[in-house]
Length: 249
Image 1 (cartoon, rainbow, N blue to C red):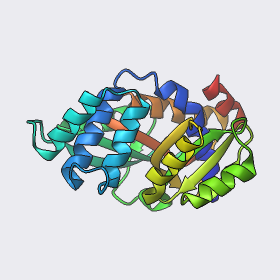
Image 2 (tube, rainbow, N blue to C red):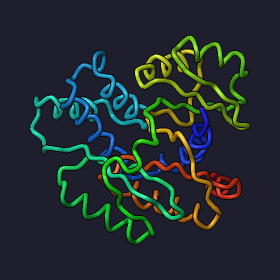
Image 3 (spheres, rainbow, N blue to C red):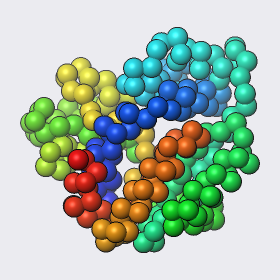
């Protein structure tokens, strides 16, 4: 699982600030609409929709808002056509970036992503230039103060996890995407509330950055994720401990 725990640390540190983002409901609504449009409106048979709905609930999104987004996706309610696009890029220091977007205007989003990259020292790459270095996984982080490692290990593996690692202040749990809902339910049944819980792309290998470059990468990610069309921006950058500490402060 090399390369996974560090990104888990970044996600764990970012969880609190992500919850403060004002555009979170509209982003999740787009995620739900896209999932329902691509796989139907039944979360029992549509994993992407189940994940998107769970994300909405975790953000305290009103049930009516979730239901309307599902209906827009299935065509029961009128809605604008939206598209899922992933941009591959390079950040300062040579780190890779995967930028996942959902948009109703492809030209606008493409131009905005390119502009944000250029202003923050990044460059847009070609399709396939960095995606080969990432794999889709379910990722959870749980405070080590909430449960013992052995108990969590048994619980997680029974629910379909591939790996549980002790990262100091939190445990990192990784699983195949199809195990997301089962694992989330198992943690909830145990009374555990993960700081981070999502489907994400974990790096197979990382790029070690010096502190200055690492801060530039985080600034670029923050700029990208503040854009209304950007769902996530994921990097394989290995951040120095001092920068991780700043992120959590």
